[in-house]
Amino acid sequence: MKHKIIVTGGCGYIGSHTVIALMENDFEVIILDDLSNSNEQILDRITKITGRKPEFVKVDLKDLDHVHNVFGHFRDADAVIHFAAHKAVSESVQEPLKYYQNNLYSLINTLISQQENGIHNIIFSSSATVYGNPDTLPITEKNKTQRPFSPYGNTKKIAEEILEDVVLVSPDFSAISLRYFNPIGAHESGQIGEFPNGIPNNLMPYITQTAAGVREKLMVFGNDYPTKDGTPIRDYIHVVDLAEAHVLALKRLLNKEQESQLEIFNLGTGDGYSVLEVIQSFESVTGSKLNFEITGRRDGDVPKLFASTDLAKEKLGWSANRKLDEMISSSWKWEQNLREELI
Ligand code: WQD
Image 1 (cartoon, rainbow, N blue to C red):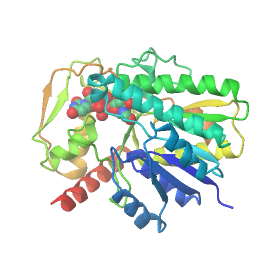
Image 2 (image 1 turned 90 degrees about the vertical axis):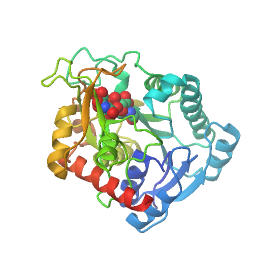
Image 3 (image 1 turned 180 degrees about the vertical axis):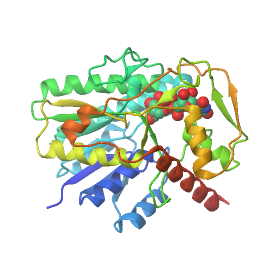
Image 4 (image 1 turned 180 degrees about the horizontal axis):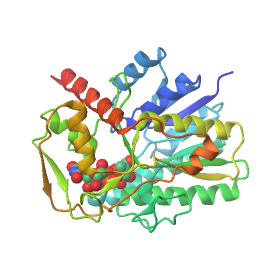
């Protein structure tokens, strides 16, 4: 009997890659997505890659009645993996209530519906942004969380606190929160990848769109940080490595191996690369010169963020395998495929 997993936000960037990893590991997947930052074509891509079409229900998770009704159809699900959230940092600063309402209502309604339908496990998509500007590096799960710089980041911190409170009063409920560092890259098929709405916030899609001629040039936000070349350092992790970690975390929950009702794991590579190093790697991987200009700092950016990967290695038996060059080449392949289709 296959385990059945509800994946909210499963048409999104990390969600779709995780759906593929789940299906390749013989899980049955039901995607719930409002398609606010994705489209149904992703389902065809997932089908093409895996040979099977995942079940899909279009649902706005802010609508509790609808969510409750949908979960009622999937009472036999074994777990939820909750990706559904808005994730554009700068937009969250401009529209905080949109982010608090969407990201927190979606989680709360999912948790209520899980409890009403006897679905006792959740994996939550969190972010290293909950660490703010870390006091020590590499960042371990014991690093204290700080008030994130953006409402987006704060929704992740508050969400984890909600999970803490829920498991305290629900002895049969278990949760794992996965704190992503900087997810980049795309599935090797070039069929799915990051597809930001409008102007990308994040470095990698901005780089590939600049190289594809969609953007005129990349602005490098500051080179006066206390780092080797003055540009900020981040722990970039391949989205497929990230997806594989979700499968291992899910198995940990289903096999009841967790050591507490809420476990938290960093998902990074443990390596940090500066913005200029990423640009240099992009140029050498693609053989193309990138048009960029050094400008002023971006509000909220911190000098260095990279993960300690010890806990995920020890408890999940997971570590990232894919290197920066593969992250970059897969991002570039996806961008080129995207442009060919859009023409
Ligand atoms: C990386 C570096 C920028 C764009 C955020 C969220 C995190 C997660 C990933 C959602 C920084 C520099 C960027 C550009 C640049 N979000 N940069 N020019 O800020 O580390 O993390 O995205 O899951 O939760 O906080 O990622 O890709 O935006 O920036 O110079 O046009 O690239 O200054 O140093 P970040 P990023």
